[in-house]
Image 1 (tube, rainbow, N blue to C red):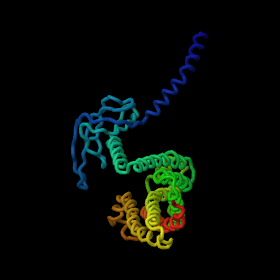
Image 2 (cartoon, helix red, strand yellow):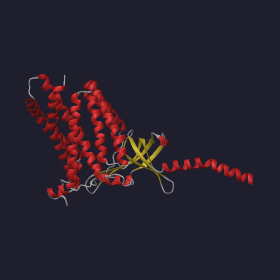
Image 3 (cartoon, one colour):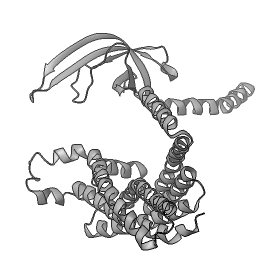
Image 4 (cartoon, rainbow, N blue to C red):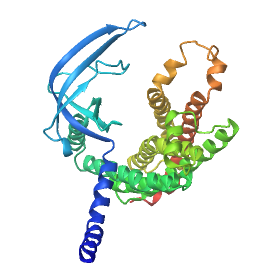
Length: 369
């Protein structure tokens, strides 16, 4: 008996890690998202909602495309409930499926929406191909910079913010790395590149200070969006949401400042090379005339970029429903006030960037050979 008991105890401890590992895998598979393909429309019906919109409900037969669900047949019955954002699927469509086990052990499947990775990858490939075909070596450099920018944001800025670091400080440091890489890789290690970096950094600091100042005056909390509220719950309160708002303003302004300042520095260089007899004041005035023309379009571009991203929000507040009946009531809403301050702070930084870049280029361009 003792020998049998000893064997059972030893066997238990040998198998314990495997049992725990299997249990851990089971817990991880409580909910899973995977890709599948629609292979048959089993049932479809359309109903008219009270608001006049059409509801399309489908019962689909799916075939798993990845993971444990690969080549398995799945039935999704979407005729039992009405979802406002539900799409109409056709045979051959790739979809994302959410799996979760029921309380009694049954399998529950829900089609989240279309799988869009292939179309995104094809568009990205087409974008890179066109940029390289037209821009040649400089286009290739621009693609490299884009990838490096993505990596800095994904591997440095976001992890640091998630770990509880100050988002504003981290965004400034990350932006500085992006700035140095972007300018030196695309423009080369030249004196004009260094001038552009200092000009952009100066304008970026001004934009950051204005954002901090006016965010404090307007008492912005950063909780205007649902994403911020969800992020706080997900990260356990480690994220400084107000700092995250300011970080977004800094990163958003970086791209537009990059474009305006590099163009302005290049213009001063060309003026100096085309006519070395021009005085500094003459070069400054001529460059500023072009810069001001460029500036007006850039400000409009900045506004349209923010307005386009917030278009559903702007439409929502244009329906004249309480509590958004008057213009002042709309502006008092934090979501709208946030977008206005974001746009105006970035625009002020952009406006100041042109004379700053022009002045620095005029002062130091004489060192160019």
